[in-house]
Length: 110
Image 1 (tube, one colour):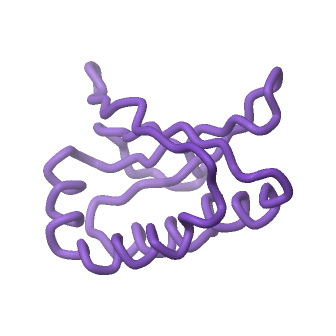
Image 2 (spheres, one colour; image 1 turned 45 degrees about the horizontal axis):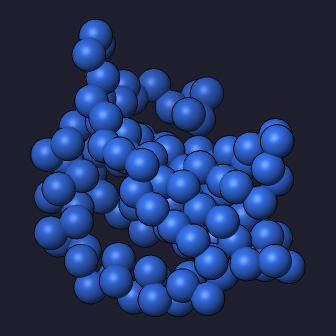
């Protein structure tokens, strides 16, 4: 999470990606905390932060963690911004050879 962001997350979506060979720098720019996805998410009320992590044993395997104040905040954002989400997803499709949603998680103790 962004250290100086005092909002508390209660819901996080984890995605796993494998960028296409050679596309790693573009992938990192698009999916990182200042990338096109985070810029879109910031337009949603209740968005907290995006994190991008790379596997230390498989440097072409990445995880994103998109944190929201609540599941309902995320669902409201997806409903309101579905066209923008789909547009960015189509733009970024050429950067990856694999992607899957690992899961959606709620914090148990706040």
